[in-house]
Image 1 (cartoon, rainbow, N blue to C red):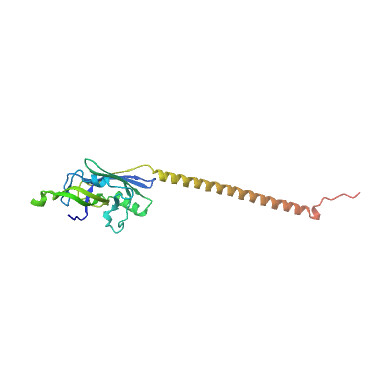
Image 2: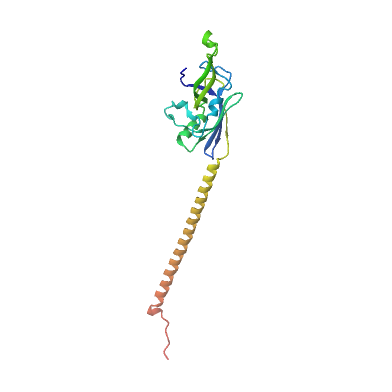
Length: 233
């Protein structure tokens, strides 16, 4: 059965490094056992096959609003380092590089609460009908297996409990520390070079002033009025 892409929301935890230029985020892209606004329940085990199929370069993307926000489009704003199914649902953890303007903009929207949660974009592989499909209330479908495409940062989660839960500062990334150390060393070398140049210029200026004073003295001594007078016998 063909299925259009659907979305799920869950709570999100944020951790931000002011000096490391990266925001570390984690949360749940999906929760098991609850009926979402679309009338579906994701069942435990629904992510097992899709997570096992993840390969380098083929990881689910980190998008904003599923690529539908004009400012961000379909450009990823970060990377999901961890995607794992546990008893609660789909746990995800990743990084947002804040030295990238688009990613920094996404972080600002997270920080002020505009982006409040997580949502998954997926294709349904297997499901069984729920009671809602017959009696008009309750779950319409129980999703047994899905193919995960992306996990987005979103504005309004379908579940009222799926909100940003925490934000805290963390340490610098190793890459940033290395880059900062290299810049500091380059700055120190430049400062030392400028100080040495200033000393050389001061010495040359002092030498020039000394030369001028010496020439003035020698010029004065060459004047006939200043030559020593020898008494006549």
